[in-house]
Every structure is written in structure tokens, then in C-alpha cells.
Length: 555
Image (tube, rainbow, N blue to C red):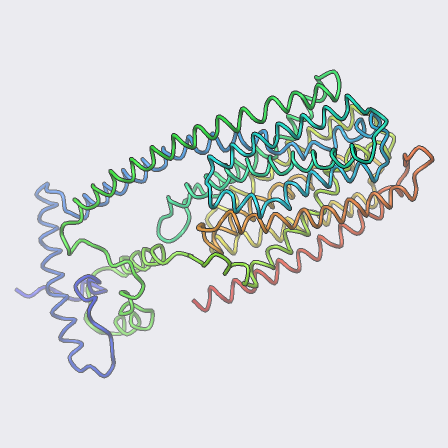
């Protein structure tokens, strides 16, 4: 008896991959009917096998894929742990505001000179990111960690040597070398961090399913970025418990390099393990794909017959077989196979890249204004050093919370695509910064208002780093992640330098003879300008959202 073809909705893509739907072909219906008959007979055979307790080839493949996914997920854990440790010792630049006031007193510096040291550290980290990104892309995480260990050790050693041998008598040459040393701390820390972040990002993207990143992608990136933000808390704790600045810098000179060396060893071992696992999986894959009929056609060119317009024609009355959901799943697999892969410099020629760069610069520059000047902000309102230390710890915890929160929110399921959802979150981050600066403008001289401002800024600033990593990966691919992320990280260096230099000038305009400012006017102008820039960043992010929305609708 002939099978009932009305029970099936789409034709088998493997058996009909050679067909091309064309209104001018008069024999299309006959071809579809023949294919559907064969598909129905094959499905009846599969149902019989399942009812008899025999496993089908499809179920075997699905079981193999599930085991492979679980194995890959477990293999990521060592990479994630090592990356978190790297983050914990690489974000020490966020703690600069904690010891800036003591550094200013010990070396008898002006506010502009102190801000220059903070800018050098930021520039070493952020301006150096394009170079550190290229080092990571071309040499890998092992070499990156080794170079980072050497640079950070000698940089911290030079800072301590300057404090021991010059004190308040800082010559121009010693001042220049001190700037270079702070720049080296930032550069080396950034190199170690990008080695961990890049390795985790690539490992998580390997778990992509149905053309979309793994459900753990944002959370994993958030954990690594959170450890980077938590580093400022470790700086604050070590500063409070060590007797002087010289011991403080010696402590970090002896902590950061060993962590990078251990990370290099772990990455090397993990790389060998991954190579062995990949070889075993390739051999297993060749054995499980002997049957030609079981090989999915993942290329979008082979799915031309299953375009949206053709699906509508088939649904309108043409004979077909298999559920529609199977076709959607196949199209998602095609999206995965044809995932974003750009040429080396192609991403830098895209409008979306520079919109993301501008938005990130706005939010990060405003955040660095508070992070690098928190100690003097407390001083300007008559607060004590212990108050500044408490706020530094609050800043670190809030920074960590923001990174984890944005990672989770970015992974949450909504009606919009993950990329559009993260762009919306980036806009919310800019608005949060703007509201925080408005609070500082009107109530920055009150401890409670300053504490709320610190929490809002730290959550938003930390979250922006997670969002940028995820957006760079989804918009421009993972093949040149280091280079793309490196240039995006240049934005905070530029905006942070502008904000910190400008705030130092405004501060000194109201300072007394000993370069100390007290009162609301010390940072009021800086709060206002930073808030306006953050609002501008939200507008830029809206443009990015509209651009990406039109692109997705067109596709």
C-alpha cells in the first residue's frame, strides 16, 4: 500500500540536494513525490528498528555528539581556571587610585604628575592591546604569558628601586623611567590577561551549537573578566596589610610573574592534550560517517533548494515529507558551518566596528575617571584614607558583579538575537554611567552619594568589558580576536587619558599651594563632562543597534 504523503511536511535534504526548485520545471511534483516515497519507506524502517529495540544510525550519531560536547565542556575547565588566575593578577591598574595619594606624598609629586603615572599604566595596558593582541594571535598564549612575566617583574622592580633611591628628589631622567615602568606594568598585565581571555573565548566558541555560541559563552567570559576586576580588591587588601609602598610593589613583583609562568605551563600542557583529543575525534568521526546518506549537507550553497520562498511554495500544496523543524535545524547547522570568518584587516573596515569602538570609549573613559581618581575624590570631600580603602574594595566587588551580571544577561534567552541583546545591554551601561555622573555632579561631596556613584560606575564599567568581548566575537569572528580586541581596548586608553588629564587641570585650578583641593568644585566639571559623553555613547550604541537590526532582517 502506498504511504500517506500528507503526514510529512518537507523533503529529505540529502536525497533532494541535487534538485533546484524552479517554476519552469514541469516535472518538479513528480520528482518530489518519488523522493517523499523513499523517505517514507526509510522512516518506516527506522520506526520498526526503534520498536524492535535496535538503535538507529541517527540516534548513535546524536549520542556521539552529546558525548563529544560533554567532553569538550570538561576540557575547557583547566583553561577557564588558569584564565581566572591570570585575571586576578592582571587588573592591578584598577587599584592605582588606592595608593595614588601615598605615592604623591612619598615622591613629592603634583596632581598632574600623579595622573601622568596613572595614564602611563592605562596606556601600557590599553594602547598596548593592539600589539599584545597580535602577539597572542601569532605566538599563542604560552609565549604571551612568558613575555608578560618578564615585563611585569622588571617594571615593578624599577618602581620600587626609584622609591628607594630617589624619594622626594626625583630627577627628570628618573621621572621618565618611572613613567616607563608604570607603562610596563600595564602592558605586561594586559598581555597576560589577553592570553587568558583569548584562550577562554576560543575554547567556548568551539562549543557553538546551531550557529550560536554556547549557552555558557557569556557566563564564562564574565567569570574571566570578573577576576580581572577583582584584582583591584586584592590591591586594596595588600596595600592595607603591607607596611609601606616599597614592600607593596615588591609583593606584586613576586606574585604576578609566577602566576604567568604557571599559566604558560598549563596552556602548553592543555595544547598537547587538545591536539591528542582532536586526532582521536577525527579518527572516530571518519568511522561514524562511512554511510554517505548520513552526512549532513551543512554548506548554505547546498541548501539553496530550501530557501524561505521555496518552503512557502512547498507549504502551499506541493508534496513534501519530514517535519518543518528538521529543516530549521538543518539551516541552523548551515549557519554554523558558514560562521563569521573575516580577512585579517576586514573587520577594521566595517562601520559596526567603529561604532562599537566609540561606544566603548565613552563608557570606559567615564569609568576610568572615577577609578583613577577615587582616592583624591575622597580627599576633596574631607574623607579619611580608610574611607578611600573601603570604597576601593566596594569598587572591586561592584566591578566583579557587573562583569558576571552582564555575562549572565547576555546568555539569557529572549526574543531578540544574542548580538542585539548585548548591544541593548551596552546602551543600558552607557545610560547607567550618565546617571552616576549626574549624581556626582549634584551630591559628590556626600559619602553616601559617592558610594552609590562608585557602585553604579563599577558595575557598568566592568560589564562593558564582557559585552565588548562577546560582541567582537559574534560580529567579527574568532580567527583574529586578539587584533580586534586589542584595537577596541585602545578606546579606553584614549578616552581615559583625556578625562584624567582634563580632571587634573580642573582639580589644580582650585587647589591650594600644596596641590590639594577641597570642596565640591574639585570634580564637579569632570562629572558633568563625563555624564554628557556617556549620553553620547548611548546614542552611538543606538545607531549600532539599528545597523545590526537591519542587517539581521535583510539576512
